Amino acid sequence: MPFEADRATLVAYLDTHPRWTRLSRGTAGWFYGWDRKNTLADRIQIPPADSEPRYAEEDREMCAQAAIEINALVLGLPTGTPGEAVRRLLEIINVMRPGAERLPTLTDIYAVATGQKVAPVAVVITKPGYDTVRLGPIPADYAPTWIATLDKAAGHITLPEGSKWGIAAYDPKMPHEPPTAATTLPALIPIVRQRLNENERVGELMEAQRFPDEYVRMWALIGEKEAYRRWRDAVMEVDAENIAARAAGGNETR
Image (cartoon, rainbow, N blue to C red; front, side):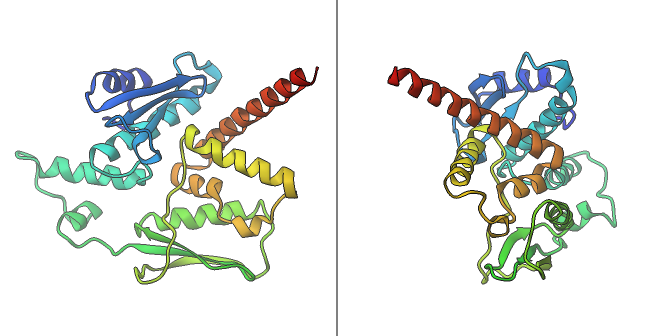
């Protein structure tokens, strides 16, 4: 699937490919499942058919992310695989095909194809008073994106003095959290619902305890703009649920 594919190209491919099934469609987008599955790792989202022109840029970004996730699944990888890793793997496949040009030298593609790939790393987050968080394994060339995301996200919350994060060698003997996150609306809605319920019950929980939370992790995987849009859509869906529930409760008391 071309990484620059538009919505029409995606729909034409998804609706005719035997391994893709349309799961649902609504105002938030259309959802397709790989091999009829409906799990976070096997599901993609594309813009709705009647999306407003003011969302054109967001729709293009969603299409680009869908193309990455389609290619990842075809390669046997989860949808949370970084886009750059998917691109490189596809380039390797293309240059290895019969009749392709000789592999270029002194590039990451050459290094991976010849078994000289750089070992994966971990991102370690230390917060005084809280457990250390280790995320990994993470491709070495993608780890700086995680660090940049953490740097920016930390500017919006209050963390204990002395909090820090950095890149370290990945040690499989150490406990690590997978560097993944929910990125689709169906997966985000229960997370947002739980978060709003917690905040209503006990007030705002200490953000330091949850850092980096699902939102920050999604930000690192798909970018700040797209993460904001998807989280906003999930919040709107949960708000609509709550309004409908309150209205139903009011009708029952009359």
